[in-house]
Image 1 (cartoon, rainbow, N blue to C red):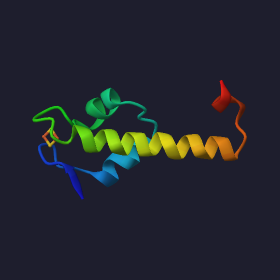
Image 2: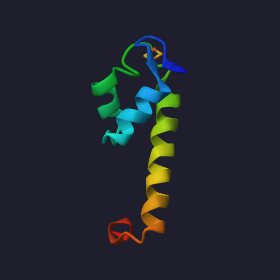
Image 3: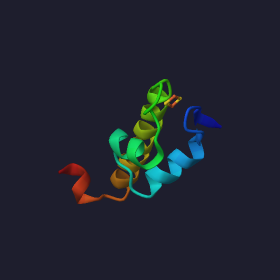
Image 4: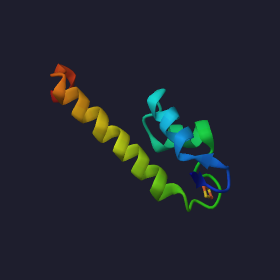
Length: 70
Ligand code: FES
């Protein structure tokens, strides 16, 4: 589904960028151009970023990664 209408960026593209290492809104803006025009997609992009961080945090906890506690 298209998340950013202005730049024609889908949720799949955003998730892919997150998996490839984008860790912030500024990186997503730079890589994909999301939230750089009208800004209406910003809240949804932020949700996807937060979801990704939450999944990563849970995975780190399950795997007992010491860096998660730092
Ligand atoms: S919908 Fe993303 S900048 Fe307009």
